[in-house]
Length: 231
Image (cartoon, rainbow, N blue to C red):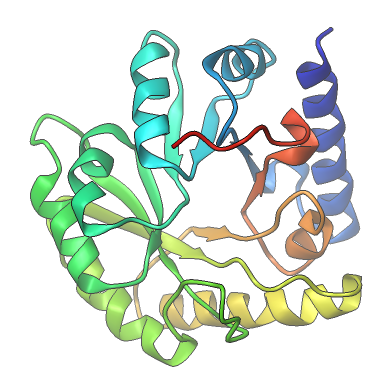
């Protein structure tokens, strides 16, 4: 058993335990393995251990990895910021995008999505705590953006994503994650029929699951410390 396989087993056990503690079914939360800065071999090892969904932050690095591993049955999620000159690469190569915070970006993704591909699955990124270093639309602006994105022809709006600032303890993390869940619930109450709440990482996945997350993004706990990012 490889180190990555052992780590995946541990993370899956954490997710299952957190679901049980929250009174939820153990299969209610999907694991997104964040493979940014790790090579194709690491992804292949994770795939061999049953992992299929992978998250990437750096577009060009990811596109190379996606091409190298195109024979594997993987689902690729863009979870990093998207510059306007990178929307075509994202639209052409990824299956999901978690970081839509402007209608212009969503519009470009829709226009540049190849006709032979399924609609691009997207999440609205929300900044619930006003962290200066965090991207995302303000909670009070999320509904208007979500309604605009949902109307685009080559996208399918799936939910909400957030990366709150680190918190000192479990209770504080739950308080912040509850704000994200409130945005998600409000969008659903307005008829958007969303199914994905992408929040929680290696350090705080238990609090995120307690607060209703349906997808946790875990990198370090699976792959270890990160090598220097590719340029």
